[in-house]
Length: 384
Length: 146
Image 1 (cartoon, rainbow over the protein chains, first blue to last red):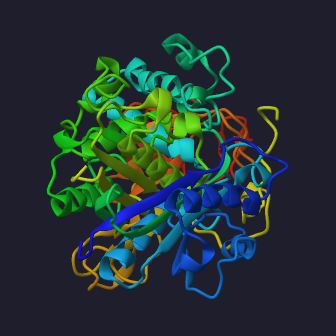
Image 2: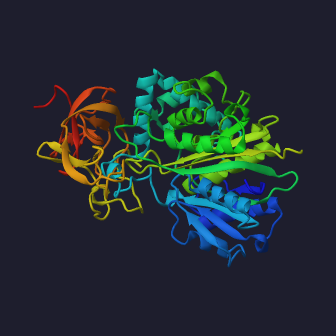
Image 3: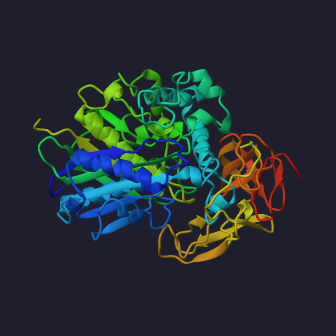
């Protein structure tokens, strides 16, 4: 990047179902924590990038009303599940290019006042109109993966066992603090209600409310650095596509981000990736280059991606445990990686983590291999 | 909520999913075949309406029909209510012979194996406990039905 970009501060709300909260109150929790951590006030903010899918329209400025931030450029980005990560990406690029000095990025979603269950498919979309829900899309991918690679449903379920065990250590996770009995066992994950075969309920992220935020500026001593970030959109996914839906955009973004950062997949100490459904984490790790296609199913089973393993993935609990408030998710992933690289992640700290990765995939416009994907690489201050 | 109750949404859900009407984006079965388009320049087959060939960006698309035979890319059984579809119901992604990949409801409630041979049909077949609205694409496992 042209100018070294630092993450000055991050913050999140709690994650869960909050009928007494509005999008504004959730966002204020996250923005307040991020601004305090960054040591900035409203007057310092030169521009705001906002990630949200279901808004409502006007949510960005309605949030800012209470904060004293006003008059500066405010841009709202919708990139499905990657909306918050795309807002972060734009903020980082704006600082790198010198367009803005100090930039606030936040993401927010209040899904529990929109949907009683799973997200209702979009009627203007061909597959949505045909009745394909998001877990169904991932289930089709999972069935293909199982058939092509000879993977097992136990391997899929192990991803949920791992991430929910991580989430128990995260006091802000939607399903973390509620799990008084601890994380579910493999048998409990497999025996939970079937949602879309082979994916059971505990292999699907919950419908969650929440917000997350970050303040970015030129890197100062001690700041977590943004080594690179890449944002890509989807390309056609059709009869010529051998890979399951959603893999190719992640690989395109990863190739660009790793190349720009000058690091390799094996160099990464800790990752937050898009595990909306268990199969998602498996194929994402393959696309990121942690292993070859077909080998991703073994990474949770072997312990490689568990806390204590060689490359812990989703120490926050991931979308499966923290929850998936669409527009907030990418910035919540960023917050976790920043806390990890600062060494302040508490019970879920990856010891000595110096390089971290954030990945989010947005979908699912039918006929495209994704709506958007973002991959970002970050490091602790190399001089510290 | 109970398993069979329709999900509530503030989103534009469409008439088939309990909301207001929107122009139907689904591929259709016409005269027993999937009605789509083929590029006059590169030959690419598409099932969804497009302004020009999305593969080569150069060719004009002309109407074409595909199938009804095809091969299952992947199948699943959905155990959630989606619009008027009551769970469980089966879906499959099917690569039509020399044609596009399309999503279809399966007339039997089971996971169709990857690579199995199928035939696409229209009409108001049943998928699980629900029937289509006349504009759905259905898939029959080869050797079943008429």
